[in-house]
Length: 246
Image (cartoon, rainbow, N blue to C red; front, side, top):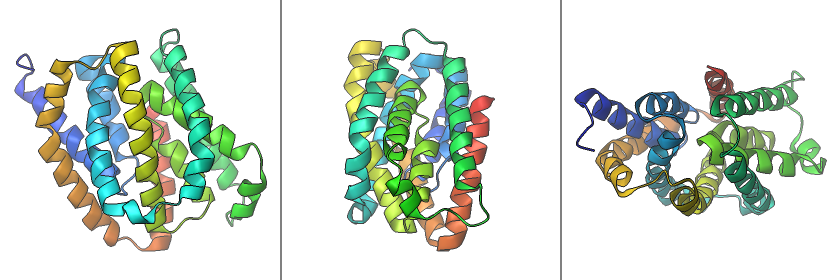
C-alpha cells in the first residue's frame, strides 16, 4: 500500500464511491471501476482488490433494502449461480481475460435484445414459463461475477424481465450479491491467491468513499420515478455491456 502514488489512491477512492452507489440502486456505474483497477493492478489481481470493496458496499445495500428482497427469485437463481461460480473458478486459470469479458458482454447484449424485441416488454410469465431462463441467467451471472465482478448487467436483465418494483429490484440485487460475493472471497483468497493482507489494507482506505457513495445513491434513487428507473437501468446496462467490450 505504501507503494501507491497519490493518483492511484485517488483512483481507489473514486472507485469506492462508484461501488457504493452501484450497490444501492445506481446499476452499472461500478463497471467503470473495472478498467481503472485493471490499469493500476493488472487483470486478475484487480479482481482481488475490487471484491472486498464490493462486499463492504453489499453490507450497506442489504442494511438499507433488506426488507424488500424477493426470495422467490433468489432461491431460483442461487443454485445455478453457484454452478457458474465453480465454472468461472476453473476457467479463470485457463482463459484469456479479454476473451471471456467479450463473451459476457455479447451475451448481455443478446439478453437485452430478447427483452426489447417488441415495443412492449414481454410479460413476466414468458420468462417464468421458459425453463431455460433462470438456469441460463444464473450460470451466466455466477460465471461473470467470478471472472470479473461483472454480473450486475446480467442480474439486472433477469429482474427487469420479472418487472419488479424499484425497491424490490434493489433489495433482491443487494441480497444476491452479498451472498455470492462472500462465497467468492475464500475462493479468490485461497485458490486464485489474489487477496492478501496488503490488498485488504488498500480496501480499508476506500471505506469512507464507499459509505459516501452509498448514501449518495440512496438519495439519487429516491428522485427517480418507477418507469424512468426501469428505462435508466436498461440504458446503463447496455452502456455497461458496451464498456466491457472496450
